[in-house]
Amino acid sequence: ATCERQDRPGRDDPLRYPPGMFTGLVQHLGRIESRSPTPSGASLWVSLEAWDHRPDPGASISVAGCCLTVADRRPAGERIEAVRFDVVPQTLERTTIGRLDVGDRVNLEPSATPATLLGGHLVQGHVDEVGRVLSIATEGEWRVRIGVGASFAPLLVPRGSIAVEGVSLTIAELGREWFEVALIPETLERTTLGDLKAGDGVNLEGDCIAKMVVRVLETRVGGDLRGAVDAIGRNASPD
Image (cartoon, rainbow, N blue to C red; front, top):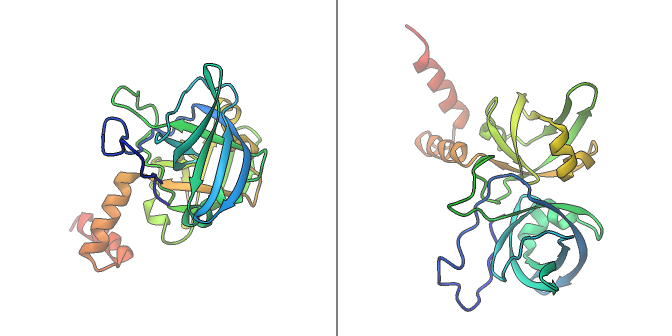
């Protein structure tokens, strides 16, 4: 699912409509106000609930880790109390956006600018896969184990970065088709990750650098990524 942008006057101005890029640091929690089907997918109104950000139509916002474009907004005095997104069928089918109900909370982050502090990691808002929460351990360290498909697993690196529902996290432990993240109280309080339950789906985006490396390896070895990894290991071994 890629960043969805609508054609509108001024879109050809790159300073006004920059491509979506995020840092994985959630700035606010919004709430789904309404959703309705449209001929091209769905229309989604999200309440900003006292967020001081004032997005213009055409601006990119990460919603639960998915880059969406503001199609309309509803002012309330000097604030913007809600924004509307038009969501295409692919996004509804391949991300958790399609499963959101009225009243659900969502992580929000405006697109980064050259002045934005990169406190997380580079996140594009392009969801690669919907993972599944396998288990949650809350004694001592709060840990969430998430299952992934075989095609997504090569993007995971021990102590590497991953975006879960738009939140930049570090992989604490890694299995063949699962990974774990450790959540601090600040993350639990300021994002939707504290609401997760076993069985929930979560939007996942692999590190963009890892994706480029994987793509190069796949191209060089004709799609046999496992063989490429084994070959690298053999070449790195001492004689």
